[in-house]
Length: 200
Image 1 (cartoon, helix red, strand yellow):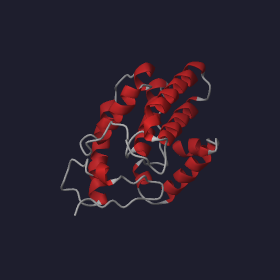
Image 2 (spheres, one colour):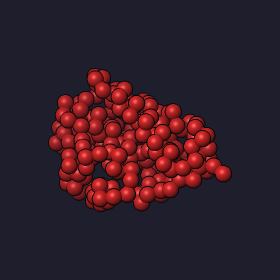
Image 3 (cartoon, one colour):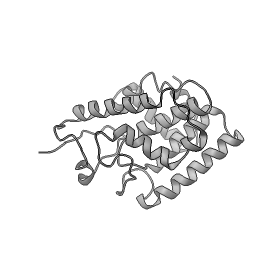
């Protein structure tokens, strides 16, 4: 029968070929998938704790890809690989490397020149990398961890709280609704609500 995934508003569906990249063939429900992914993500977060990561390493294609692989590599074969399919969000798949390179260059410039306040640099990076949509799935969670790492490792600030729990954002509810609304405002260049939500 295969895996049937129930998607929330704002989530990007996987195509059939991407679903075939599932490594744990006993997973058959969205709940089971969420559980395995969450365990893998927690291992990735553990890996970052106590690590010193320099700007040039963190703000690099290699790190962006390796973090995604650490987050999802035990569940999906395509973890850490750029998507090859077109989605309801993101740039055309063939433009991902170029767009990511531009974003990484921008982020280094913002950091070196203090173009925006520290939290805003992290949130702008998070928002931009999601709009590129580098990977078949997991882009939202990946972008939030990237933002957390930027504020923690580069600016020596506390990580974001994301409405008190990253877990809440993977389930329907008030936190997710506020998050989606804030993202839509950020799409139009207004980052205030997303910045406030990240620290709420």
